[in-house]
Image 1 (cartoon, rainbow, N blue to C red):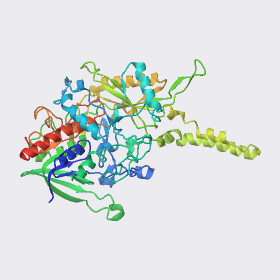
Image 2: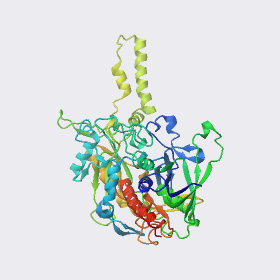
Image 3: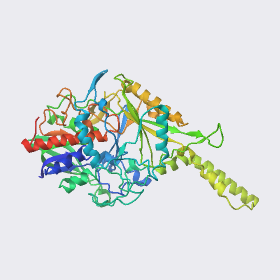
Image 4: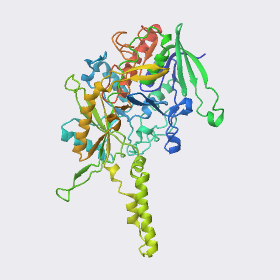
Amino acid sequence: MDVFDAVVVGSGFGGSVTAYRLAEAKLRVCVLERGKRYPPGSFPRSPHETAKNFWDPDSRLFGMYDMWSFSKMDALVSSGLGGGSLIYANVLIRKPEDWFVHESFDGGYENWPVTYEDLDPHYGSVETMLGAEQYPFDMEPYAHTPKTRAMKEAAESLGLPWELPKLAVSFGDRPGAPLPGGDDNLHQAPRYGCRLVGECDLGCNFGSKNSLDFTYLSAAYRLGAEIRTLCEVRSFERVQEGFLVSYIEHDADADAAGDPSAPPRRRTIRTRRLVLSAGTLGTTYLLLRNRSAFPALSPALGTRFSGNGDFLGLVFKARKADPDVPGETEPRLLEPSYGPVITSAIKVDRKGSGPKDRGFYIEDAGYPEFLNWLVEHNVLTLSNRVGRFLLRRGWSQLTRTARSQVGRQLNDAMGKGLFTATSLPLLGMGRDVPNGRMFLRDGHLDLDWKLAASNEYFNQMNETMQAVSHSLGGRYAANPLWLLNRLITVHPVGGAPMGNNAREGVVDSFGRVYGCPGLSIADGSVLPGPVGPNPSLTIAALADRSARRLVEDLQQNGTGPS
């Protein structure tokens, strides 16, 4: 049986940072990641491959997207080496200092046992490691990004602060330029500067994203960390001087090279210290499933769930004043597919502790160009346009029309594509109420989350997005799921919240599990409430702080305090 100083379950923003810090301290560390490796060029784009890009091992799907559906909320997370960094929009915003709150709400409270000052040096370390830089909006050709300029103008017209957040992206001297030392990574693959194609959320096939596999995991690998992919942890138990960790070893190629009905292989390894970093849903699910082995776990397990206030809106049919015809307007091009997915943000700050004062961010959103084709040329529209074109050609043949150049007719068949060019998705996130509770129902993870407590927050978000849309001369549509009293989040947090004691939280401010010496958690599940802005940076900073303390604990006594 393999024996390690520490085993890290998961390779997202908590697990990758932790693995690097442990390897840096010359400890023998093993990372167990359930998903696959995704070197540049391996992210699917064809309909056939994309249809298989979901995570459901029971159906022999070992893809990147893991969708969870609950009664009031859906959640999308990632499965793969690098965790959520494979599909996030690269945004690194620090949690505002006055959002580290100690507040009560109807039926609960949000209490942060860490402060901005505690995390400040760790924020800096993570930003440096991830190569964080602002979108170079003042440089060519990046200055010609319509959606960024539109967001800036909207913020100014509404009197709201606008910013270019730091992004974990390498832009290079020019779009697509080879990055120096680009193949110095665990994939041994070359990397290129951002090509401004809006594919960040689908996985970057050019290696432009400074995702965790290129940064923390590559650094940990160079320092000797062992990284095992397609290894899904199912159970763990406390033994003398450590833990036994049992996992399933998936064979994603069994369909092509072996017996797809053969059961996966089960492996067991031993470790002095165990760090759970399987994400908000994964870690909470693992702890609930293995709770009988850890009777001292806090009753707070499963609580403080939040969707980080995620909300989606859409600006469409934007218009602006026509400079040539006074009193008239013309289409305003927003071109959401040009640039990284997110380039800028508008902040609506909290000015109190009431339900209407919880604060949020609104960010521009992009998507790949091929989605524009799907929207503009759906089957019905395409059939109408092409039908008219074919009728014209048939009529010309019958009447023997001499006009042979048909560029105008083809232009009409293609359409002007103005619906997508004048549209812009808006991504909102902020401080919804962390009143959700996760639990097991028939062995499956379930969620009890009451939207009503956050209604005033979402109403304010919706009204502000509508104001942004109108300032751009556009129409506005809210997420239709919200109208059905349902939401979707890509930033689930909570479930194993930190607290000042075992009644208040599952872990202390360093991620150490109360009542379970040697067991730690480093991921979004430890957050006692929403971050507000994109949570990745704060999760990584908390992991950096916790990992440094974990190293001290291991060096001092091998297990650390309970």
